[in-house]
Length: 372
Image (cartoon, rainbow, N blue to C red; front, top):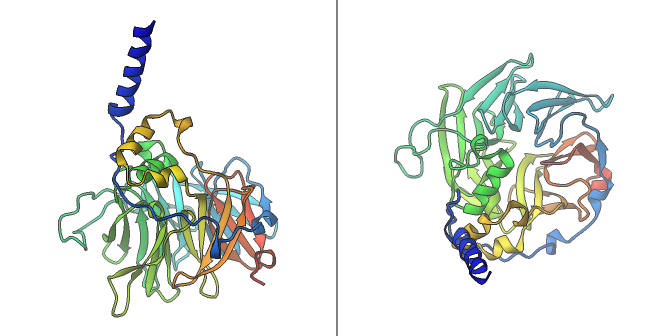
C-alpha cells in the first residue's frame, strides 16, 4: 500500500513538473494591483442596467451603429441587428467564423475582425469579402522578414478618415480557431505573456497589410481618434493602453496613456465629447499577478485540471477615459449581474454595453450613468 501511494505521488509530481503544455510562460513583473481605489473607487451604478433579450445568441462582443440600428457580433457567429425603436433583434449575417470587433466604413460596409477568418467586409446587402488574412512586407520596428504572416486572431477594428483600416491581431502563437475558440486562446496567451500580439493596418488602395506595433501581450481593443491623428490599442495581458501616433512630429511612435488597470481590459470605443469607453472583463487575479515572475510555476498551474485554475470573476465594469488616459467615469456593478463587459457604445440618450459571455445585451440611460 505504501509503495503504491509513493508511486502515485511520484507520478503526480512528474506530471506537474514535466508534462508538455502548450504555453512557455515568460517572466515579467506585474504592477502592484491597487484594486478598486482612487478613480476606480467601487460603486453600484451599473446595477441600474436594463436588459435587452437576445434569443438564440449570446455574448454580444462588440457593437456598431448605422442609421439608428445597433449591430452586434455574437458567440454563435451571427451579426445581429437591433432596432431600438421597436425593440426587434434579428440575425442579419453569419460570417462562418467568429466575429469580434465591428466598425462601419464610409460606404456603410461593416468591417469585421473575425478571429477565425481575418478582416472581413460585409456590404449592406450582406455580401462577405475577406479583405486580408495575411501580413505583407517587413516588421516596421525590427526591419526583418515577417515571422508570422498569417493573421490567426483578428480581434478589434476601426477606420481612419483616409479609409485605412486599423485592427489588432491578438496572438500570433495562440490562434483562436486552433486553440479551442477565442476565450481559451486568450487564456493561453495571457498565461504565457510572450508578446505575441500586434497592431496592423490594411490599406484598401494597394490591399497591403502592415505591422505598426508588435510585442503586445494580447492586443485587443482598437479605437481611432476623431481626427485620425492617433489610434489607441488595448494590451489586455499587461493591463494598459497604448497610443500610436499617425500624424504630426510623433507619427510612427507610441506611448502608454494608462497603466495598471484594476481589471483585464477588452474593447475600446470612441464615444462623444472626447471620451473613449473601455470594457473591463474581469478583475485581476492575485494568483496570476503573484506568479508573474515565476514562469515555471505558471506552467505547473496550467497542468492542473481546468476547474482548479484561476477563473474570471463576474464583475460589471466600464470606464471612460480621455485621449490622455485620464479616467472620466467608472461605472461598476460588484454583483456582476451583467458581467464580462467588453465595451460601451453611446446611442442617443443611452449607453449600450457589450459582454463576452452574458446572455443578452445591456444598456443604461445616460442620466443614470452620470452623463446628463
